[in-house]
Length: 287
Ligand code: OOG
Ligand code: NI
Image (tube, rainbow, N blue to C red; front, side, top):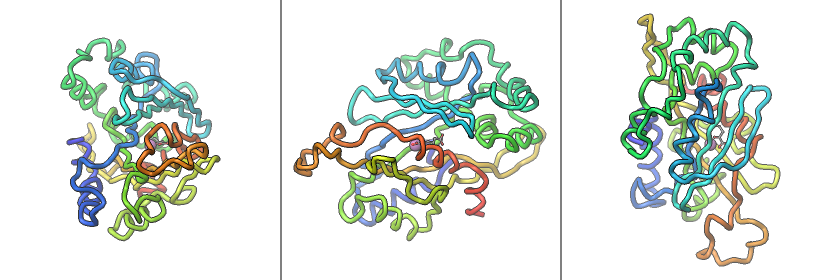
């Protein structure tokens, strides 16, 4: 979270304003619905590699999702305890890209000879933290980055940002009235100058109407490339989720409602649009 907060100034801006409006007492008072990571889908990396960390700590793999246009696969993982965030991991289907882009990606990922998770001391939280922020492959040069971005904005994001946290997610339904719905919370966010991803509308709603999500547009970071160029590229963003109570628990008293009574999991159509929080069509709105 320390590095994520440095990369995404919106996090402290939002939390400070939430304290100011007495939604929470302090920054640690929010419920983190889930966190997300992105990976390259090559044999020694990808979901099957990164998930080992979370499986080791007791997470359990749940549904898989497929995004044909974006050429992505994803999985989500349920935590061992209720107060821990869910995990969402996606991977680029490198095999489905054009030969040129595939070759460029593999010139980087081939530097990783074997699954790196097998070489870290997975029991050490510090070792895991270091691993997530270590370089897996050489720093990209700007030409390669631009070539990837033309075909897949996800590919260019991962080649530069690697396993940096892609987003964390504030649970909006936990907040006191009137902020406990995504529509009022979004209004609050915009009133403090936060720019929201509006791909598919600012609120993405699941088919059953029970999972509502919105997200900020990713912050642009100054990226230094191997050729010495410094360019502004997409970093990470913040997400907001409202999970409504399942119909069968509609008569429960508000103070009895726990996570198990609310809509679980994710929704492919929502996710498809949330990925675009780091895509140029959205990030250009902040400059
Ligand atoms: C993940 C986008 C999907 C969700 O909650 O459905 C997502 C990403 O941008 O890597 O976060
Ligand atoms: Ni998410």
